[in-house]
Length: 414
Length: 207
Image (cartoon, rainbow over all chains, first blue to last red; front, side):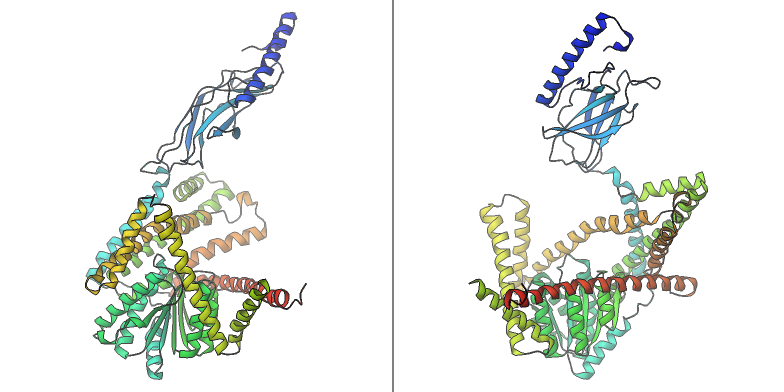
């Protein structure tokens, strides 16, 4: 490489003209081949060496979404009077056009490219930027990100999940030996009262488990509570009916009710028609349930599970026939309707807590207590984190900033 | 044909609306049509998309499909009372696999992300936040913390803990109130859409 600024004679002019012609021809070639080396795009007198030994390599321990790029900086990249103003990283996807993805300050010699796909291949060019233009390296060989068995970027997620899981395991073991304390949840006492009311009035009980399938944890929680309710219903000899919108829920609900009736010593009272499949279609299901609500006039309606736009329609119809309604869902958008139209509402996690509380199962209770450990951890971190970041940003306390940085790196999801 | 379809749609719409007055034969007819057609539609869709589309047209290219098909066949064991218990296996697989799958997703988005986003300077960086921003920051921090206290089940809601839980339920109720109003407005737009169909497409009163 050369620098013509220091020469002012005819030889320099000749070299300049030759260089200009060369640079023009190289630029044209670069456009036609997309990827080329040492592209001089300007005809000013400043010329710099490009970065060399550019290597794209696998980013270790990720989910096939990143590649690492390293290079030897341009020899003209110096701290004092350096010619390089920046480095530009170009990427070609699946052999396509080069596009600039990052501009880095001088002195950089590596870059990690995120948000990639394991199904595509990528090659890179790094260009040193000077006032006269860009001087590009050779293109790297095409490479695809690979998925590893371990994703180190999620190590904190793993460790915190492991901590909470250990707490759950501990409390499950403890629950098998002694009774664990769980605070009373408003509305749970009402369940037995509601079943008793239906018995006294000689009317039926309607149970609606939401419109989601068995892969939704809210449906599972609803069916767990159903198990307890079905036991009481079997003892009181009350009529239960349960229209469902998913075939798997029908199967699981029948199993649950059958087991509860057997446990209560009334297997003869069980029949498959207690649980009926209607349709998977959301509003077709709602039309049917609304119809049987006004025809059967159940004394008690349970709405426990995952609900969507049908929540208000069902709760309003139940309200209009004067039924006691006990609802519960973890969908925040539907909770307001249940709160407005039902007598008791299990809000969000209360639904899961209620299923654990009512089942009295060591696994369910231990799980609930273990999750409380997670919540205690979250509360502690939020309290410390908010105080530390407020003090650090207002009074520039170094120690507090260290705390904030540590917490941010641990709980970072980016 | 298009006019006939509009008349049928209007007839069914009015039939469903008639439920607002009281349960009647017209509503029952519409309900039965709705339930019957939708159940049949779902059966046909699932059959042609999954069984025909993936195993006949696709020739079962993805070997994982055979695992799903095998689990599906196990579900049918319910039809044979003696070995009906086998149908619990695919149910257990679905419940266990999805619980494990969602655990990490929910933990990442509902716990880690929530904590990460709540840790912020209440006064803004270098006292830079305005009054509204400071109030907003305090609402997020206090609301999240007190909400967590409300959903903590290992301690009675008494004393300072109970007071904090009460603050948490206030936050929840304010949120629900806002959500209620927002959703009611979106439901009104659905009603307007139906009325637009009746008065526009059907009666031609809206041009």
